[in-house]
Image (cartoon, rainbow over all chains, first blue to last red; front, top):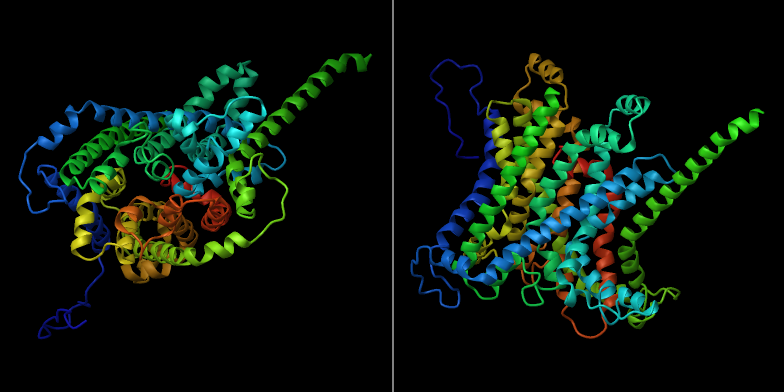
Length: 307
Length: 283
């Protein structure tokens, strides 16, 4: 309060010279906050990635140039981490899109209880990822007393150690359980804006359901599908809580994705240099993908506006 | 004569009805499958440990509140931390984000779209790309394992969402209203407090709800930047798994308490949530 600059008063009182709130001044606090908490740490990550830096021995921190990157890229095990990341995100995305599309189509009809089902459907998306992980791990997938094991036994089969034998599939199904409602509800809003008269016209012209889907529904649906793909891709590349709570990246490195790998390097091995290099590569990878997807969306948006 | 000629149509209609009915049944079935894990967890919260662990699974039992009683003592500090972190970060995100959204919506310059896109792009920054320096910075600033530290990071996470969502809501206010105010000599601040704020209240509550849910459910920053004193519910639940012995029923009770408020609010605001989750792309 005391530091407010006092305007000189010898001139005739100019039209109210107090500190005026300009629109630009309203934008800067948010911008600055984001710069300080995202861009600055990222450049520090880039900086650390050029050093051999372990918190076990923080006093020695030699500059090693690209050594961390070389180590990361030359270890064939790490290729597996990248593949895991892509398989996990891609697999989950595919499942959520397919089941989500089916659900959206089913919910786009008039039937008793429709509003209630739509409301309840979002539930699994709202569950804390760590809760999802521990519930699935202990109560559904556990080979000794999980529900699926009991189901298998009661039909005469042998219980499957889901997280041990099919770790990636299990994790994908678990995360797909969380994200399918998201896909379904976004796709549903896309369906609800379908031009009814066009559908009617196509039906009168004798279009088959398949033709109707390809030529009317799909083009109209594209934007909703793209939103799902973009949002899910960004989120699924960063999956962490589900893995932490269920498999801890294992068995071995079977379900270790990039975020979990970096977490292990930084907070279990204290290898700051290597973790930073992996962080930089993850950011580059994610951004290339996101920019590509955004371009794609931009192109369809313009096409829709023109057509 | 007429009856025989209409009977195929009637039969066709009846087939159509059966198909409709089957599709509805299928819809109910799929939704039930999606709700089942949750229902199973909530059910387990009211069982004894032996019942929760039993094979074949126990379906009929006398519900007990024992698990809630036993879990409550350890649960309460984590609950408080989660509440403070979620509410504090949402408030801060609004203090910073709402004025920015207002300026971008009401006084759009050529650069407005660029600013918005840039803000969204900070969401493309995986947390792992910033966690290492943040951890070291927090250590030096004594922010590790503190609620202010957690609030700072949750604000970063939610700020782009607040700006985007509120921008989407504020652009819906007709420009004529602002023009009328300007003619009456209203300042930028008056436009904000007298027009934008009251007229965008529904948008504010929907956006705030979404920000609260995201902060509530967050686990990466929570795990890496807190340990005990400031540990929120996500850390509490995550570490529950490492305890020994029978703990499912108690874990289910804690998890139920954690999930239920989010579910209830989410059900109420479901439509608005979808708009928010797509950053306003789907309305």
